[in-house]
Length: 210
Image 1 (cartoon, rainbow, N blue to C red):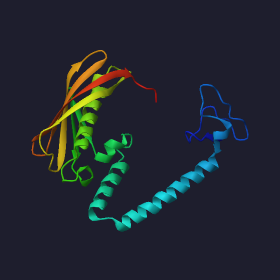
Image 2: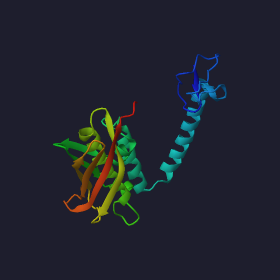
Image 3: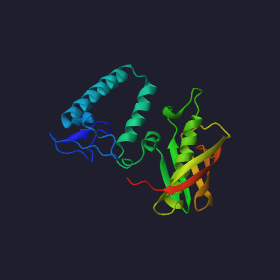
Image 4: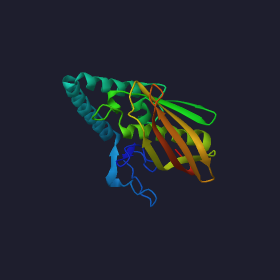
């Protein structure tokens, strides 16, 4: 078969090799000039794999103890079978969730990968935890069937430095309309101290077909 160079996978309009890959108005990417064979795909894959392997070897040889801790955390998240279908951000930060009675609890460990330059949890990571938690709640328990909820804006107020072994975000529903929703998220440190408070607005859209 031949492949569309733009997408690097089998294109619906691509025909068997040695045939013409017809270009249609609604398939602008699939042209004869952009067709490449599976042999070329494999060659490129091997080249990228060789480059990544080489760079990774160099990184390991020069890594500090903290570097190795970060790499270990990344690999543990990527190889987890339970999170195989989760977004990479969930696996990178090791988010774990529990949803009950229209409330979500999402936790994450505090590891070197989430710390800022002064040794506390980065504010952007906390915002990501909140957005992921309340966004998950919106999509799983709030949005009507066949629809999805997307963030339109989120406001985060940081109250305390986030320290300890893990963070916990508790998300609840404040309002649900036909087209919009408002949710609240609170982040607590391991000792129960409230570190951040947030509200997020979400817009309901038809769920994209996968």
